Amino acid sequence: MIASTPAAAEVCDKVRPGWNPADSPITQFKDLGLFLTEPLGLIVLLQTLAAVLLRKIWIANISAMLLFAVVALKISTWIDSDDVTNLAISEGCIAAPVLTTIILIALCAIILTTTWHSSQRRN
Image 1 (spheres, rainbow, N blue to C red):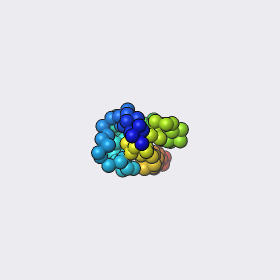
Image 2: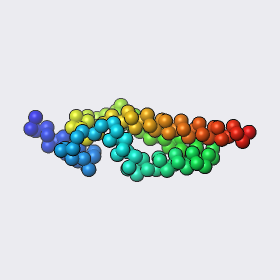
Image 3: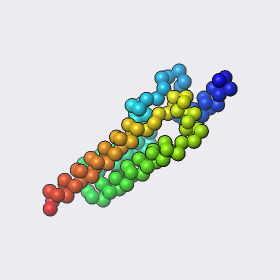
């Protein structure tokens, strides 16, 4: 047990550098908040906002492809988890990206729905 603690702490230092073991373990909501405040999450939010407000088909397509790529990345990282990911989960510095994935899929649905309604109104 003592030998595994430094290795796990070293894993968490690499996976989530700002996380402190004295903090509570990362929950689904904390994982979502951390994703939305990192650069990729901010890009996703800005792209979604642009697609919903501008309602251009080409912006919606780019946004949907970006969201699908991020969802695929999240799912593949979780499914193909290696020892580093498993140690980080057991230590509590990362969580399964279930809520983040659901929110990203919902954002994609919002983009596609608003763009589809906008194009139907024009026709």
